[in-house]
Length: 339
Image (tube, rainbow, N blue to C red; front, side, top):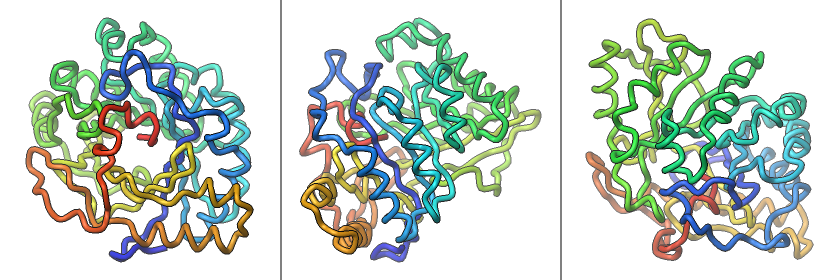
């Protein structure tokens, strides 16, 4: 379906849990955050019902997120049920990779189409400093295991962190040179703890890569369902992508909404307002009532976020309401929203 600004919304990111087995410095305090109670989180059958209704209203792609989604018991069964839904074209997963190798056979059997692995550094000491765990070898093994799976699209997501990994941009990008996978650099969003971390823009990173690998040519190939732009570098098997919500704001073509683990339909990452679908589900309403609420929530998606980046101009964000970071200023925000 289309929102009030005539954007076609066909992609939803669903957080299945706010819990995580890492404590990344820009996402969650080292002491953790107060997790949702068991009853506050949507059950799998509730998620399947909602996705069925989302699909009947034009959603074609689902991304499973967290927290860390693989800590949610029985996740392959959810993916299997989602893959049965008419109209749904792809189900993908974003994970930190710690549990991925062990669960990969089940996930593939369930029909997983694609996986994004979050990894910001290739150095063990930095990995431990950023995440709070000495687990880099596990993640690298999961990455290699995924690249061996026929038909599985693999991407690595690296958040740009000026004080931690900018001297590794070339090394991270090189993973796409030797493997059938893409490497994507994501600009740090000024949300929650992330506001205290400096990142670099797409143009800065691209210039660094071109200084080493030669000119990159912008790809016209569709590589996924989101806003990333991709570049080809000579000699690379995969591509290098950028998700640049600040320096190259893509709000005018944004095609996504989010569903939090607690059942809040969020039309835009920045804003706290949304539609409480959990309460509707558990009050016993019929599908028509749920559908009307879903359509209303999507239609009201704001025109753009109001974050400012190095080259972005701040404008009127439209009808988004209160910014998320005002309401949850001190929380490890992304773990609850689903990044």
